[in-house]
Amino acid sequence: MILPEIENVNDILKPILGPWYESLNNPNKAQQQTLFDLLKKYSSTDYGKQHKAAQITSLRDYQTNFPVIDYPTILPYLAQIKSGNYQTFLSEPPSCWVMTRGSTGKSKVLPATQTHLKQIFSCGARALVHYAVQKQNFNVFTGNILNLNFPSSVHVIDKDGKKEIYGYSSGTYARLNPMFDRVSLLPRQEDIDALGSDISRTGWEKRFELAYQQAIDKNVTATMGVTPVILAFARYVQRKHGKKPADLWKLQAMFCTSVPKIQFKYAPILRKYFGQVPVIEMYTATEGVFAQQYDYLPYVTPNYDTYVFEVVTNKGVKILHELKRGEWGRLIISSCMLPRYDIGDMVEAAGKNYFRIFGRRKTLTLLEHRLYRLFLGWLL
Image: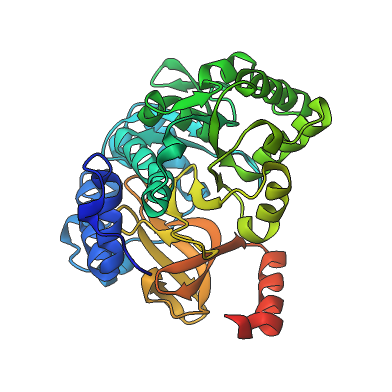
């Protein structure tokens, strides 16, 4: 992995890329610093005080004092946060609430603090900005980014005695992201929300038609969002209007999120519709923007400067960057809102800060991966 010289990066872009590049030079140092920054936040919460966050001086102490948690674990805390007692679990009040797509079960509803949102925006911009800097191709910034996100206005939550509207995280983050005030988003998230919250085929076709009509005569340089939705839009355009997206726009890149096997399962099909466009993988979730593709290799590289990553392997819990090539396990992530959170994803190391998220922690996924390792492991 060859890191670009930070000095050669435009001053406007340094805050986005500089900390990431530095963390890749020394992941161990970066992870220790990130942990200490997180512990300061945890120590101001009732949950953190209960687990002696202020007294922890090492990652080993952290693993000893803080248990691994998951979404069902934090539901009682979320109830207290909704009633106004955010300090029970958060270091700052939530700015809004967001929900997951529910692709693997019932949708989760989570708070989003101001710090969390800033990290979503800064880390979310890294894939796009790094691609532009690495390729020295800044045309991606000169046009419009196709917005195919979920609606951000779906349900009403009773928060501290007041009604508050919330929706899917992808749409909410797109609506609030200050980057999209400088880079045009088509359609605007407000226009998408105006079509309602229906996510059936009919609802999506309304959104796809809106995107098509607004973008048809515009310079569209990229699309960013949930990978299956991008593919569904391409198929809709061809079926409804008789043309492929490649006939209408000359994209510089596609930034694809939210599913495993993007490079192997989706990229070849996407290129049939969009042309020979670079497909940039991002590892994102409602809980954070955790990693993005670094170069042409089909892997992602973590944001060590923002999150702490652990992996539960068959040999115990290890730090992500310490995994040797071919080692794999269940990913545990610590963020500004969630200490030692089991996100439910499986990760495998490919060496030199390259990793592959190969699926959710399910019996079929694990069986498939073991068969893959048995018959194709020699390729690693």
